[in-house]
Length: 109
Image: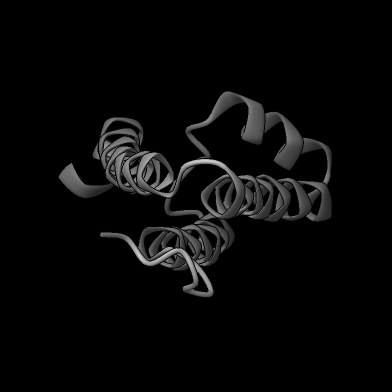
């Protein structure tokens, strides 16, 4: 049985680490001209303002984790765990596929 008293779901903690790693790696690769932003919404925000891009990235990540943690504590901890696990898997999968599709030319020469 899932412990509902944990400070944060392990999947949500992993998601925070992955999200921050995504942000830092994206910023590094963008700064060095190695990649482009694949998400059209985030690309638009990036072209408007770097701080807006960073705040939106962090804000959506923190909002998601906050909602999931509230749901876990007050509604259905098992469902929250399932959704959080699916979200981590989807995030990694979408990131990997998008990165490879958009930036394949950088690696093929």
